[in-house]
Structure formats: C-alpha cells, structure tokens
Length: 283
Image 1 (cartoon, one colour):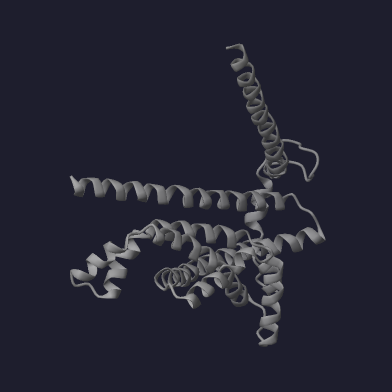
Image 2 (cartoon, rainbow, N blue to C red; image 1 turned 90 degrees about the horizontal axis):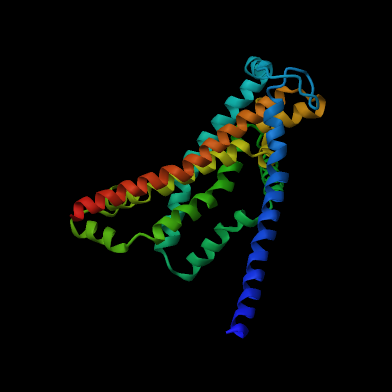
C-alpha cells in the first residue's frame, strides 16, 4: 500500500505545481496587457493637462473631444468606413462561404486556401500592396480606397465564420425545402440565411470593431481629409500629445468592447431561441 501511495503523491505534486506557474504567468500577462489601458482610461478623466500626474477627476478632455470638429469628422469617417465595410463584407464573404462549402472540386479547394491567405499575411504587407495597387491605377487616395482595402481584408474573416456555421448545417434541411417546391433562391432566402443569421451577426459586429480600430490599412490607403480616427490620432500625437487623446482612445475602447461583447452574446441568444423553437415544434 505504501509503495502505491508514494508515486500517487508525487504525481499530485507535479500536477499541482503546473497550475501555479500557469496562474502566475497568466496574471503577469494580463497585468502587462491591461494596466496601460487602465492608465489611459484613468488619465482621460484627469483634471490636469498632464500625462503623468493625476490631479483629480474631470470630464474636460471629453468636452474638448466632442468640441473638436477635426476629431469629430474623423470619427464620422471611421463610422462610415466601418459600416460600409461591414455590409459589403457580409454579402461578399457569405457568397464566398457558400461557394466554398457547396463546391468540392479541387479548384474550389485551392480557391478556398487562397482566400484564407489574408488571415495570415502581415497587415503591413497588405497595406503596402493596396497602396501600390491604387497608385498604379492612378486612383486618388480617399475614403473610397480605404473602404476597398478594408473590404478586401475583411472578406476572409466573414467567410471563415459563415463557413463554420454552414458546415454544421444539415444538407437535408435545404433538400427538404427544394422538395416542397422552393427554388434555389427561395431555399437560400427562407432556409439557409435564417439558419446562418447568428454567424452573420457575429461576423458583422466583429468586422465593424476590427475596421473601426484598424490603423495600418487606413494609414497606407487614406487621403488627406477626412482621415479615419486612428490615423488622426497618430497624426496629432506626432505633433503634440494632448490628454484629449486619452478620451478618444477610451471612447474607441468602449465601442470595441461593446461590439465584441455583442458578437459573442447575440449569436448565443439567437441559438437558444432557435433551440427553444425546435423543442416546441418537436413537442
């Protein structure tokens, strides 16, 4: 009995030692990652015009932000870019996902692999390539070029998310709709799209958040005015550092956190609703 207890204790100690290191490493990682963000949020309420000395709580920098027409125009530009990119990416990415999921030939598999390349390509490479492409065509850099570049970069994300939903969908559902007299388009509109709606919402919210915060693509493809908010912040930091930048960064952080949270929560709520309807109909 004693000989059996000793190795068991040794294994238990080794197993218990690993989580301790993992917890410590995770805590250190979270500290290094989030403390600077907490400092930015805190100093956005600083009453002093200082980025190192906190003199008390005040909303003066938020007032400066909402009274700065240049920053507001950049905010409107970022919202416009994010909205158009989200809508176009959902349409094109869904079409790509449907094509890749339905066609199983070798050229289709090769196309699917090529379509995923933007996910692993460094964004700075994509930005430089987009800049060379637009200048080669003689296009003037503007919000249009930013939107085109962002859509091109975002399609792959939508395709991956939607394709994952399509792969879990049974082909028998669409085939049953076709047997009941639906045309291919009606089956797509009445059966497929409602089924993948949670994935479409999640992909749209995620793309909006990614594009709203994006800097590299926007930096290489934007014109002079109006600039996206991320590029405007970088331009102002190069000239002078104002505490109002902390307020802008805090607002962008809140928008991103809200959108990402919605992209996680809304599909789950819709999935639970669909499950409840299935149980009711089955009962």
